[in-house]
Length: 540
Image (tube, rainbow, N blue to C red; front, side, top):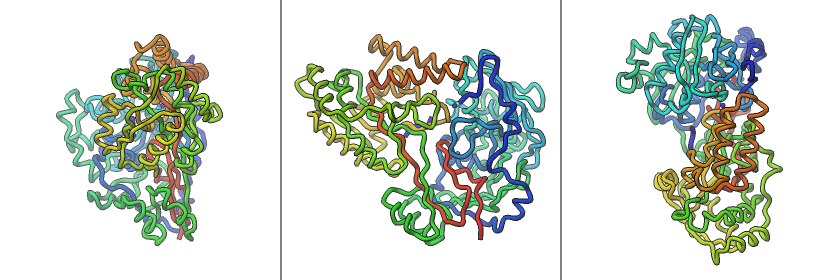
């Protein structure tokens, strides 16, 4: 899965001043917090082996969950919602008429865990560091031309082109605001040579430099990460005293431990564990939608794709698939996709618009292709289980479906590292893959356009045909549009056209299953940062 934004109002400017007084669903009073029966310790089973805990370098989901708890961003989203950016460190914002200059008003009275006050200088320093580290998070700021701090409570971000997606992008935990004074005392650097001069990453494995509701107490690689409540947090105190993320990567072990009460939450369980967990006393099982697209890729380059570069064959594949059967593999909570943009985001098409299985039509299209036979190699990750879905099982189902119309595929299951290399290098003849949202905006899924990231992997360039060139231009127009309604309309036009001429067969949007003890409340799942620990509470 690759991990790699939403708008309020355009024209005269994008503004969220009215949101400054909007009620936050899970902000409670200090009296409420004091009345909590048992703050206690919350133990989560999952992955506690982190590549980094430095926000400026983080794009891994579990790392972002920790950083969501320990660092604050300018804007945020509530719960599972990915449509409405909310104020956080920024109480309001506005955009220029051309959507190239964004001005943010900062919340006053915010202090970091160290006690240092948070000002616009810290925001500028944090963003300059992202730009100059040139690390994994740099793609989030691809369109940023510069950051200014005209006064202590104002931040101005300038973009190279119109970019309304900047607002939701700023919710990404990798863009959390760091305590610049503390960072510079511990190896941090945001200057032009930060890539070489910054040495703060080791410090951030054991210390928090943020203003979030929690802070890091300790981290033992491959064992556990411990967070404790931040006494200097600007909002109502977290209801939990302590959070322990315990390294329990095996879903079966997680399920057993949450039933026994050794874990308060199992964050990674598979479909095989769900029936028993649903029968277990004192355990709650939930599923949440994920802004991820599972899809079939057919290589559009004749020298790689062979018969699968033929547009008639590509259409035949879309009609030959048994989508009802595929949805049973996808599991409860999954949603059939009509296009490549998940239904959680504006610009997506309704599931009712999805292609229906029609094998007679598929056979007719194969005849129209002029090919005597259609066969090839189906490459996939044989060891991958994503969202509880074994890729090997999905591949076998697709192979069987296509065989019913005369398309013969030889399964070539490969280790994930090898299969990813083929896919990223544009060498897959036929494959099944997924793209997960890096940030909550439909523009992140324009990667499927000719000449963009996934388009290149499918051997599909704007020069492939006049229609491909028009679709590439449509993607550019949707990305640059500053009017909300027009942008949504352009995105849907992109989706409808892609479904007709693209070398893809969109399959489904998966769901994340997770389980927790019945004395736990406030658990939600967000497609970008997973579980938000702040609203969670435990009762005795």
